[in-house]
Image (cartoon, rainbow, N blue to C red; front, side, top):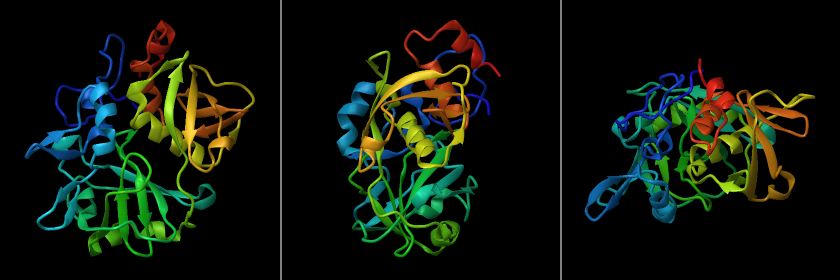
Length: 283
């Protein structure tokens, strides 16, 4: 898949990232597709990395309409509609659901009544905009509740309508998870903290290591060595050093497959990226 590049508009597209292109700007990341209220008006989450870090605890990954007690997914103007959603159950079992831009198979059906976090098992969900993972969450299949949020603990939950339940019905076949997800909380390159990784890259690394790996004896070409700090019940068992490659995440002679776009986005924003790496992002 072609490497995504940010555009001046908030809308997400999927142009190539050929030579001479500008690096992506956090101000137009697909990860920041959702809005939250502030001083009486909606303000986009698109902003510089300092504001993203400072305001992370206050992010609302859905628009909360207090008067109607509804949770809704904003329009594509806030970063683009979800194009697919990957569900991961227990033991790495997963499947993907393709979405339309509008109608009964779009993320518009994820609106619903705001509810408390339910009890019981869930499926971890990873929506995608283009080739990049957006805001992750949980889907509680028994109670038909979808929670989309950036960081634990789980929050911002809504009970889906009949259309939403129908769209996510394939996830019912996945074995349920009961422990909290284990996710990155910091990513470093040559000891430098990559603040822009807080979003798309965090979700990409988490998703890759949730699913089964392939045996691979040698490190794939164009690999980027990263240091990762994990938080969650499996943190001690996940690698603190790994390689992000064009084909996935490589560690301990295992390759966890993942599509190319997150790697390309990582390269385009990498401090002091080598000429060979930048060249490798060309289609």
